Image (cartoon, rainbow, N blue to C red; front, side, top):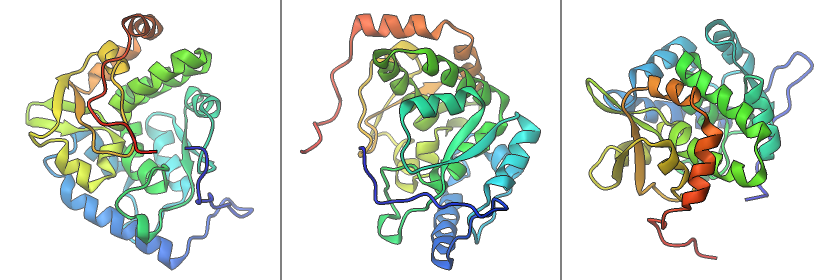
Length: 261
């Protein structure tokens, strides 16, 4: 996907972004319906981060509000970006502990599904866990590795990101929980991912990098961490050696039909 109808909103001279009442209403709808689903499904680390951020319910937050909390916890910041950014820019931002946030919100017509990552997905889905040192370290390491990787290696790293930061699950003493932002910002996937319908595999970095995915369907397979700290442990491994091993082994057959042209 190289084009989008969405345009990121520009801040004024003081850094303030003015959103319309209609845009704030979309935010409120998205937040309130997702909050009803998180108890007993989202991992504790995410819920702790959500409490720390204390996101407004009735309006889209300003990036400065998010930065104040992230700066006090893990030293991360969010940075305004256009709706779509190149891989190079994405890795540069993560490598410098800046998480990209496109400052637009979906329209009411695309309330349930949006291919582009909007401000709700990025702020509500990902930023709570950026207050967690294990998740933050993994994301930072990922950015630094991606910055130095070749085009071919980045494709494998993208699958690792998808199977962890976007669509990862974790086992806890209280049961299986969600930590992936792509799930936590989707009411349908929040319910589906913990059901008996999809496959659940114990997390293995090489296997994750060998697993094809589609962005426009419910995932047929989720990788499950034994605990969230395992992300930090992965960050301490020689990830690029794992990338080369995954490349040598090749991709698994997709568990989904090809996308219609």
